[in-house]
Length: 383
Image (cartoon, rainbow, N blue to C red; front, side, top):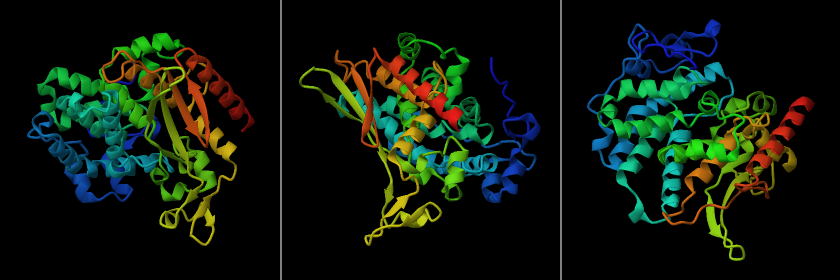
């Protein structure tokens, strides 16, 4: 089912379309990647040879694990980014500092929140598995964007064979990596399923899977957008960068409605139509001078247009289709079916964008996603 993975004992190939696939090592060097970094991971023949059998994530403290992955993977993610920008000119940053580290922090936060904000409820092994999955989840982009979840698992097993020494632990980590990407759900029959059916599918996932998916799908930030993509034409040319300049992820806020006794989770994607004077120099092509305090205005003047762009990017493109926002909502309901190990499940999710919010409940999620899909289809025809 799906793509047959190439052996890592052959020269690594990068590209989606066979006719445009290129040998990865040569491709990276042609894009001015640092030769020393390339040689750290590749043989002269182009085979991905990096392996560190002495690095055992299970045997390290959480702090040492974070530092160890950063030292070993940050240079590789620089190569990943070189490859992504080579294939997709305006693609968002997937480097360690701009994405991986934040996803790891957000995933751990959701685990902490799921455990009732009680540090005594946290399991150190689970925290390390979350850190490991977050650190490895995007390395497969070096080979292929669409199926990078599969390539990430394949490369992780080559790079850190000690992961396989505890099969049950590795199974949870591997599944979290596989289950963070939309094509996984398309391939395994998620499309067209009802909310209850999707919850049953997600209910079989270990906790590492939903926290990674939620963290990854909700991570938006203007600084993930490459400088050359910071203009109107480029921003709209690639769905992964479109609207990215206008939205910054906020952390979720849970509360109980005193009138209804319902548990509600609010999640705000902050509308960033202004940038301060320290941020402005990074956005020269998309900003205009503002007031005397040095603030500048992002060139999407209409908040309704920015909201429309947000849902166009994150919502389903067809009724029943798999989407970033749909998976995000499903994963939140699945993760917070219990709250702090109490019989107190999540009743409502409110997604705020630009001061407005859409409410999702177990009863109305299918209807809300269908409305977003229909609006997106109309919008696509108009464009």
